[in-house]
Length: 239
Ligand SMILES: [Zn+2]
Image (cartoon, rainbow, N blue to C red; front, side):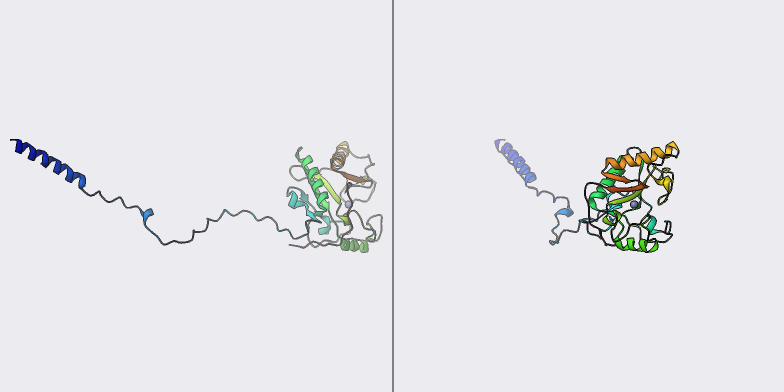
């Protein structure tokens, strides 16, 4: 009887041992563990395409393109069209440059107007001296065109001809068009509707707040006060 019990116990132990010795099932196949030859990491996926900023094709130590600083400033560069007082296109293409300090001050003026849903629109900016000669040769009269030998604030990149536009891009009524040569364009001329005088006053205040001075005979012309710059002959590229 003792022998039988011992045999049963040994049998049970043996049986249990066999169970524990059964080889473990193979792990589920995992493709990440498969050895692959070493390869360089694939390139990062391409970023979504962003609009390419306009290329800088000018000397940024000397010039700033106003629409590059603030693309919400509007342009109506009359000398790049024949819609001007000489009825002839003077610039090959419409681009608006100033000396960098001047451009920054204009952007500040524009931002000041933007608080009230308004903004600036440029009629003329830096005017290269070769263009001044073209104008002078058409109209050699210093009442209307600066003598290129002396040059003007425009030839120095420190004057702007400009007006104010509303949120829809419509010009505020300033009483006369740009380059209207008559007393109605003078700052001292007050025989105009109150709204026109208010509009001119808003332009004057905005420009004076940002370091520009007016000229007595042209409501649209302002020149930069803090610094002076030399007359320049540089002509911009057309894109
Ligand atoms: Zn001017």
